Amino acid sequence: MAMCLRLRRKTSSAVIMNAERTGDDDAAIGSSWKEYWQIFTQNDFPLVCPLCGHRLAKGDIDGCHIRFYHQDTKRWTLRKFIVQGHHGCNVSIKGDFQMQTGETVVEAIEK
Image (cartoon, rainbow, N blue to C red; front, top):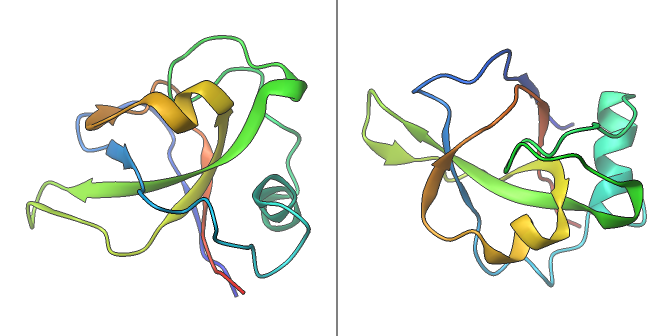
């Protein structure tokens, strides 16, 4: 079963990065990572991309794999999480960055 984690606001501790080499990963449930996220959150797609902060259109949404940085341990999570965001943000943002909005993320469980 996936674990849901709610990010309530943008904080300095919500540092993330795009997880690498996830293009061939298949979601354990649903036909896509977008559907997987909806199944576990029971939420509609967000109106704003949490990765860049700009308006999000349904046709441009990806289920984005991200990792979190833990300030206390100074390490990235080994687990990957799914958040809904722009396709462009999903494939182009490199390095670490801060979430622009608080959004529900779901642990990524592969088939």
